[in-house]
Structures are given as C-alpha cells and as structure tokens.
Length: 256
Length: 309
Ligand SMILES: Nc1ncnc2c1ncn2[C@@H]1O[C@H](COP(=O)(O)OP(=O)(O)OP(=O)(O)O)[C@@H](O)[C@H]1O
Ligand SMILES: [Mg+2]
Image 1 (cartoon, rainbow over the protein chains, first blue to last red):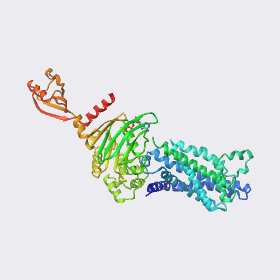
Image 2: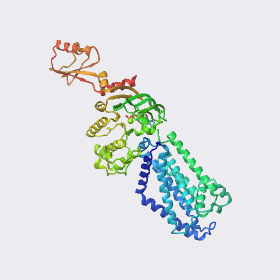
Image 3: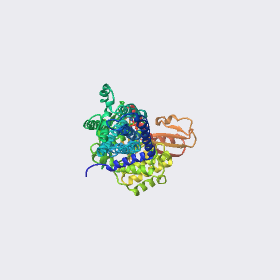
Image 4: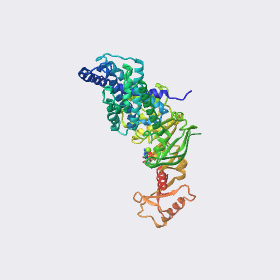
C-alpha cells in the first residue's frame, strides 16, 4: 500500500471550498460587476473609438486580459489567505502535527484556491458574452491554460501566505506588484501599440507572456509566440514549486 | 514496553534561547506521565518537537519503534495533541471541526465514535453551534475532542486544566483515567502539583531545559518526602524551650502547636527522642499527627536546588 493521506487532502479541500461558499455571493458578484464595468468603460465607451486589434474588435480583444486580471488577484488572495489564516489563528498546529506530506498540504490548499479561480474565470468569460461576440479558437488549450495559470498564481499566493507576518504584508504584493504588472502587461492593449523602447521594457514583465499566451488560445495570435508563453508559464510554476519545497524543507515561517 | 523514546533532544531557538538541552526520556506504554516545571522550563518546546511543530536542533524521538522523521506519517497518526493555547476556528460548526480533524489524520468517518466522543466531553448538545459561540472551557474540551478524534495511542495534554474551573478539572481527570483504561498513553504538563499527584504514574521535573528528575510518583514522594510532626499542646508556649533547641521545632497556631519537620528516610528521624524530651519537660499534648509533604514541597525544593546548582 502506498503511503498517503488523501483523506486529509480531501478534508482540507472541502474545508476551503466551504469557506468560499460562505462568501459565495460576494465572490461571485465582484468579478461579474468588475467585468461589466470594464466592458462598459473600455469595451463600449472607449472601444468604440478604437480600431480592431489584429482583426479582433477591441471589446473582444480585452476579454482574455480581463479574465487574467481577475484570476491573478483572486488566486493570490484566496490562496494566501487560506494558509495565512491558520497561521494567524494558531490552528496551524493541527496541520503541522497531522500525517500530511508537504506535497499533500500544497495540493489541498492550492487545489481548492485554484478551483475557485477557475470558476471565477469561467464566470467572467460567460459574463463577457453579454457584451461581445465570444470567439475561442482553441477551447481545450484555453481551459488548460486557465487551469495552469490559476495553479501558478495560487502557488504564488501560497508562498505569500507563508511569508506574510501580518495582514499588511498579505496585501502588499498583490496590490503593489501584481496589479501594476498586469495592467502594464498587455491586459488592455497589444504591446505592439507601444513605442519601441516600452515594447522592449515590457518584455521584462513576466505577466506579458501569460496574458499573451492566454490571448493566443482565443484568437490564434499573441504578442509573443505561444511556445514562449508556455515556456514562461512552466518556468513560473517551477520557481513557485521550488520555493514552496524549500519552505517546507526548512520549516520557513511555519515551524520554529 | 516503551512507546516513546527521546534521546539527546536539544533545542536552541533562532533567538539564541536554549529551550532544551539533551533530554533523554522513555515513556512506557499506557502510563500517565506528568511533566512538571515552572514557566519557560521547556515543556511546550519538548511536546512541539515530538508533534512536528518545532524543529529540534539535535536528537531523536522514536515512537512505537518508528523514527519521528523517517516515519512521520505512522508516528503522527498515533499522536493526539492538545496545545497549551486555545486555537480554534470561529465560524465552523463544532461537529464539523471534529470530523475535519479525524479526516485530516486519514481516518474514515465514524459518526458513532464522534457522537460518543462529544458526549464524553459533554459537547454533544453544542454540536451544531459555531465554535465562536463556545465558552473558554468548552473550547478547551473541543480541542481535546479534536485531539482524540483520530483515536490516538498517545495523547499530549499541554496544561489541560489551565483556566478551567474545579469541576471541569475533575471531569478532565476522570476522562484521562478512562483513556488510560483504554490503553492510551498520556503525557501531560502542568504547573499544578495536585494534578500530577492526582493523576500521574510517573513524574518528570524539568527546569531550565533540563530534565532534573524522573521518578515513579509513589517512590518520589516516599524518597524525597519529608514529614511533619505536629503536637497539639495542652497549654500554649510562648517560646521554644532551650532543651528542645537541638530539634529546631517551630511553634504554630499561636503557640498551640509544636511542629517538627524531619526526614522520613533518615535512620534517626529524631521523633522518639523528641517525644521523650517533651514528656520529660512535662509539656502535655492532647494529640499528634504526622503528614507526608506534598509533591509541591518536593517540587519547590528541587527547582530551587536545580537553579542554584
Ligand atoms: N518560538 C519561540 N522562539 C523563541 N523562543 C521561544 C519560542 N518558544 C519558546 N521559547 C523560549 O523557550 C523557552 C522554553 O519555552 P516553553 O514554551 O517550552 O516553556 P514551558 O515549559 O512550556 O513554559 P510554560 O509553563 O510557561 O508554558 C522559554 O525561554 C521561551 O521563552
Ligand atoms: Mg508551555
């Protein structure tokens, strides 16, 4: 018999989803409302004065970026909160004393947070159909990428949750780093629209590759090639996993 | 047969605090072991290491023949922990948190067992309440229920009766005895000597991160116990007569009692000679009694010596 504790993983997964269910309506209404507002402002008001981007109407063009923007923030906040809360209340003692491996712990927390992110991503996609004509060239790849990006950002959030010593630190990375990078990462424009200098600079923004890749699954075209996007996603996943592995091995901010 | 073997266990915290230095301890299967020590002695640290909350600086722990690092899954399935502080969720229902704890330790659901557990801890009526609605004493019982939810062989109780009223404390003692009857090994820490005295089969005294003594409670009390002889005098004395000075007795109860403390282990306790001298002096007494000193006296003496040594 292989040694594992899937029951424990399932227990945490269910517990975390129950936590989400308690705030279901707010977490549902918020992305729908944000999406609607973005469509009204960018899609209709401004978008009507913008030409097509690479053969796609501007309204449709921003759909993948909008999904990414919400998913990044949701993934990070849900996942970081999920592991930070037990640290804060002290109930983490039970997790640390349980027969759960590091991998299983991550699987449970990140799995639950990623599930919620994907649900939100799908809801935003569905909302967008009220405003623009949906077009997804590679639906399977789109779903695959959505799931992998959710996992990557949930892993990132998990790291922040372990690292954070207070609520302020919990907020600071998503607000000060991820949000600007996403905004400047081509969520609402193609980087081809930028002057050459800014185009080059933007390539140092890792979020560009993720948004570009996700947009590729919609329209078959992106700012960078899909292979590069995939590579960037794989690298991001690998780095997060590496950091988490190190955190568990050393007990960083988990054990004294 | 031993169920827990600790050897060379040491912990230096990142702050530089030496919390434990070279602890060796063996716990027998099915016993109740009380770890007694003042604040900051290292009790919680020791339990934390065994349960996986604290990384030891050195040393090994073997639980039921298994190394606590290599076989951490097997080891942790056997252990239940009730930490010193109250750490609970807020919004979950009582029964849900117990089910969660059981599943977290990899055990299949068992409603009948959970019901019995909650009834034992008089939490059954509160099963559908939110945890935040419980009183402090109830929360502590909830934490015990969580620790027992996966039917552990070893239970760690870190100051189980801190902040608990007398009645609940007695309830808890009863529960601990019931658990022992079922074969559960119990390791508890306490500041209350009466608790160790009441419950434990063996007592370990820890201070300054060192285990300075491990002894059967009975042996400990016999071996280290000093006794007190009290004579109830017919007529009160105002001062100790010089003829009695060599015994160094004391007066108590406003001169109505003559108290003599002696070492019960000594060959010459001094009791017969003192009594002879008292009657020679014509000091009348209506009653006399001797009392074994409590663990508390022993404890204070030990810790005091340990600190000055
Ligand atoms: N996380 C920590 N970081 C640094 N020092 C710590 C930490 N936890 C405990 N200590 C120190 O280690 C020593 C032992 O503490 P510990 O909590 O094990 O004592 P204790 O015997 O449980 O005390 P008490 O009876 O007050 O609960 C103390 O000096 C304490 O200040
Ligand atoms: Mg303690």
